[in-house]
Image 1 (tube, rainbow, N blue to C red):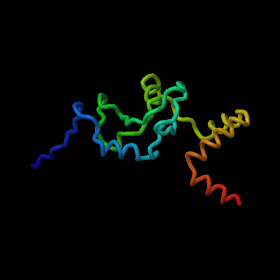
Image 2 (cartoon, rainbow, N blue to C red):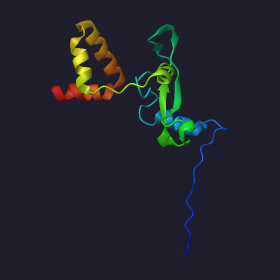
Image 3 (tube, one colour):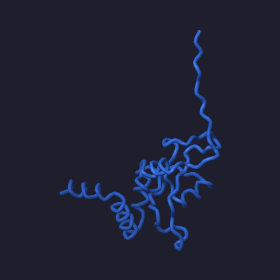
Image 4 (spheres, helix red, strand yellow):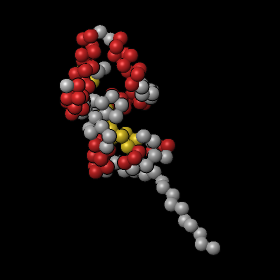
Length: 133
């Protein structure tokens, strides 16, 4: 009877994420933007205007909990959100809940949201405007 050896992956605690893997994680989904809030490296910290945010690579499943140095377990996150993650992880709001909050805001605040969205999604904004014509 042939015995099948099962590969056991053990987390590595003695080394940091490689530069190549870090770059892939930063590019992965949000193209050098924070996975949680969309901030870019160097944006002003919303809670401390004298400080700018920096992008970091964060584990989805921490190494201490069995996570691995693998692109599927890494995400880009800004320093502000990372500090918040240590204290509390919030569920992401649905599009409907976001729209309700935007509709409740004053017009000037809605315009700020619009400017931010157009800045984050310039190609999609152009396409949406072209479709409306």
